[in-house]
Length: 151
Image (cartoon, rainbow, N blue to C red; front, side, top):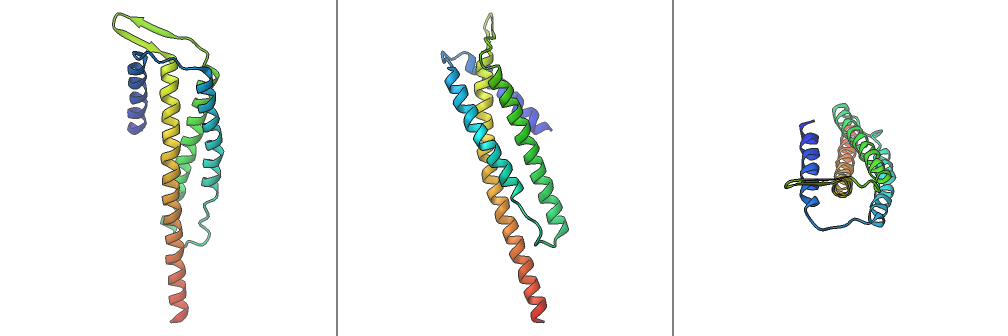
């Protein structure tokens, strides 16, 4: 939970910093980013659902990995829900400028969508590593079975 608090805080701080930059965000940018995330979301879910532990006998391994996949799936869904909300409200023009403090809601949406893109890519890499771990565990179990049969 503390990890997500730090991430949220970082996104907010970065969006405040980005509000000081003379960057304008077009609706096309948000549409493209949302489209990319919209493509990555079902790919991520299908990757998660493709895992099979049927050939693994190590219950602790299975329980740990299923829990890991469940957590990733929940986060993917939550991030996509918030990305959808950001996309719906992309035309919202909410700016605060008081003394030296500036905030633009579009900067928050921009930073958040970039975070989602980064998070999806990072977790695709983690899913590939997890797939390798599952394959290694299956090979290890198959090797044990062959050794038991040979004895």
